[in-house]
Image 1 (cartoon, one colour):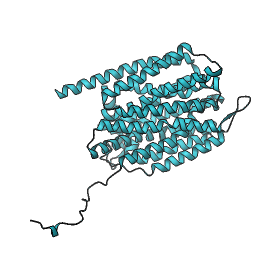
Image 2 (image 1 turned 30 degrees about the vertical axis):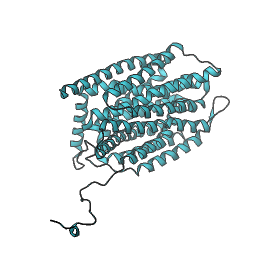
Image 3 (image 1 turned 45 degrees about the vertical axis):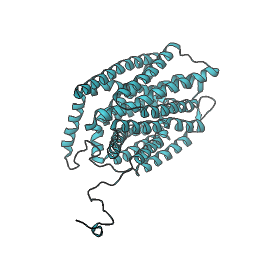
Length: 436
């Protein structure tokens, strides 16, 4: 029997025990870094269709960007697996820096290469974000013996709530620095983009302070010693497997719609509803309102996410709001002046922000819950189909009317929500059979 003298005063941790990681701190850092990067990129993107109008340079560049994003998303999970999600996040931030810098001298020789590179950078930063955030939530739930779905919803709510505020902050900066001149020109764009370059740099530096996730935490990571060929084969098997999964096939329409509705705000809403009544300088103020409601709704939606049933209720509510806005614009839109001309775009922006906040938080939580064994592949699918839908809007926008776009959006919304509700019913039914 051991005596008190034989009991060591200090107990050393086993060498194989993982150090304690503050998972909530990592979520705070990740959220703030994305806020700094995207307050710059988001505001710049909102302006592309109005300040780079010669030859439709702005919208064409964005179309090229999202086509590049779509194709690079196919290989993004492979890059993230090789680099690790933290390194992928840091590398991805460089594309946003280059794109904003290209706007200091906007022409075909600067914007097109920057757009192509940003497509690659965006694909890895978003797959890295989805993988890092979900693995962080799962580790936190495991360490503290908490419900995994609840923590995934909570962490996504915080991330998307802070992220969505980039529209508010970035567009307030735009509102403060840009001024409309007589003759339709705009001043202050150089100072604006220099400020944005500075915020992106700060965001990239902040990402260096994230904790590095291990292979066990990031489910699906492969052995780094595997050959490139075997990794590519495994990647395509993952893509084909996910596309054969009825759950992914049913959620893809909603993913695509989430891209459509984002591109609608960036391209059509600012061009046809905001600028005719409030001018180019008014874009910042209206999109700031959009960002506020997007952020608030993201936080609230994440707080109330407890599983598939809550996700289906929240998504249905957000879809109803956006369907109402689409019908309202389609049936009653007209360019008016005075107080009504100012209130109309502000109200539409607020309601649209609610719908966007719902889709962002709930799609991320849904993929994290349904596809635990292949997070990188699932989030690559998310960005692939979102970017495809966004590219379609930017290429189509110069050639179709606002009314035609609204009809396409309304039909896409109805079909995507129908598929999503069928998915949740199917999955809940499967769970109930297992429980019997």
